[in-house]
Length: 163
Image (tube, rainbow, N blue to C red):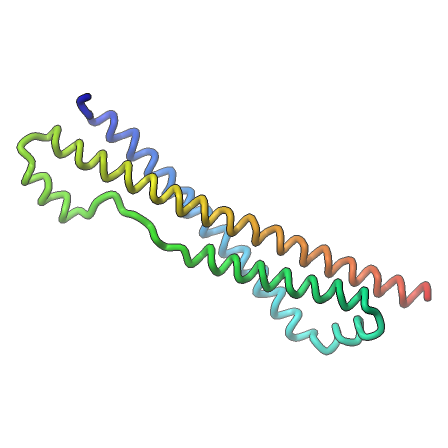
């Protein structure tokens, strides 16, 4: 099978899609990092006040502990997702220029470039999927933290007003 510029365009498009997916995942990860950092800061600065809220109820203590643990797990998962940078470039310009000079025909050059693009797109897809899974789990833990925190607040208000 003869590989053509059309094949190159298709694989370049696949590689560009993975680059776009990468950028979107990093942007989402930065948002999660901001939210969890603010949440951790809130918990840290309000630690003594949180202690008075959960002081006399094991149920409140469990809910607040669950919220704190969930937000910390979410933060760790987000940091891990943002730290995945085993990203593959299709080819370096200098190496491509040397390779082009070493090929006897443009068809051989296209075959090499297409092979490089295919490998890079596949490897980047695997990394992006892994990053997406970490961010998905991070969002689940963040939602669990918010729900636990809200339940603890509702329970606290209930105890204060309807004791």
